[in-house]
Image 1 (cartoon, rainbow, N blue to C red):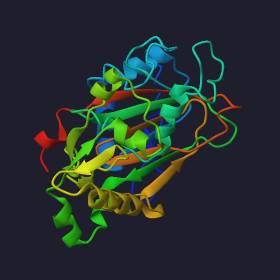
Image 2 (image 1 turned 90 degrees about the vertical axis):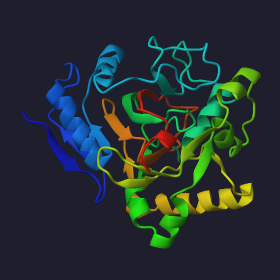
Image 3 (image 1 turned 45 degrees about the vertical axis):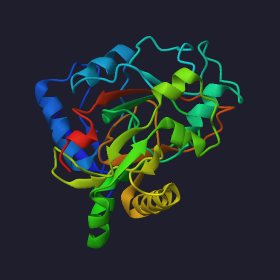
Image 4 (image 1 turned 180 degrees about the vertical axis):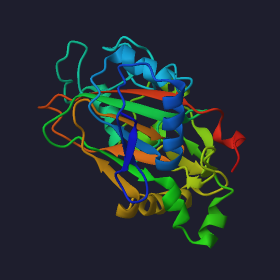
Length: 293
């Protein structure tokens, strides 16, 4: 069966059918997925009964993985691969994390609109998230197309935004939720980094906003004015015309391009239900300031 693409939203996102990720991808499949990502930015691949090793082999076929996830209390790991991010509410022994656990408080930041690793000097390219256990209700992931959001802006606003550079940090995003329990090493690791506010996507040539809850300043702007602009842009970019909500099923693998999308998790009863999703993230080729605007 040849792979088939079916759009899931009028402006972006598609379901990719007819692939089996238990088998290492061929160069032809990698090229087909890359081209589909340039067009759709989000790909849904359902029914993938894969383990960590198979997910890792699939992800590595697309480029360099981020070597270490940005987490707190990283010594409390339950997954064997250091590159794999544990998107779950589970302890090392498989029990549900306590409601007041520091890791849970930190991970609530995933409920905010963001781009993965925009707080790193070289931000993320693709993220690949695989669902092992999903709750019976809630826990969806929403995606927003930053290319379509850019296209919908008035020309004068586009010109105003084009030269702007923002600082991104996990410290900024967690502060929005009142979380400030960082130790000295984490404050150093999560120090702000600069990123363009407007990027040109290398595969499609389209321009897009590079928004994230990790933004805390705009270079040369008073901070209140900067954050008011970022808030308004985020409200614009996450309107219904630009967003897709994914309803997870066990076995789903979703790939998204962090260079031209944002996403956020939706809540579920994480004190009652188990949720186990596992993410691998590819590094981009260079910092955004070194790429074409």
